[in-house]
Image 1 (cartoon, rainbow, N blue to C red):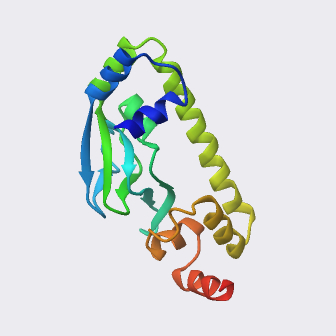
Image 2 (tube, rainbow, N blue to C red):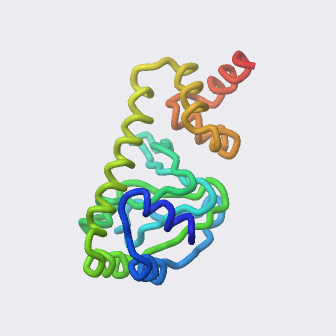
Image 3 (cartoon, rainbow, N blue to C red):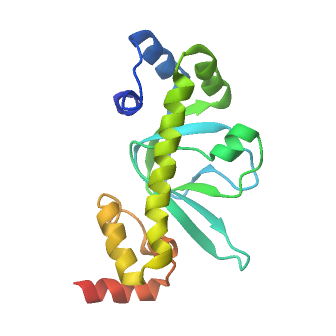
Length: 189
């Protein structure tokens, strides 16, 4: 759980007693490849921190096609924040792309941290702000760049992810077909 502690301490200072409380509320869990951490149509009831593995956030469009919105790699929180905070049904799935090891906090445990640790809400706000900035930075090029540039940008932004995810998920994320992705990869080599 030291990965979680190191991650949190980037956003604020905590004493050992506060760190111990945080660790006491988290439980390690393994999620097998292709299994879901959260599902559309259900209220998110947990916050996770990925120790090992990659997850993706995806949804189905009005044609029934699966669309990958983004990937979440190691040392990041994973939660559908709108669903978790507001108790509303999620519109997305959070799925393990690889076998994952995560630390999970229940809604009750997370709320106890917010109620008990002075400054925890500020740390959480900083974590969320960083995640939103990263999300925008990663998604913005997808709108304005051609497919080859998007692929090259993805390789640069996610060097630890590119060889660990199925090409079908990558093509979906880039907004192209799998055959187009294969052509792009062939032309780059």
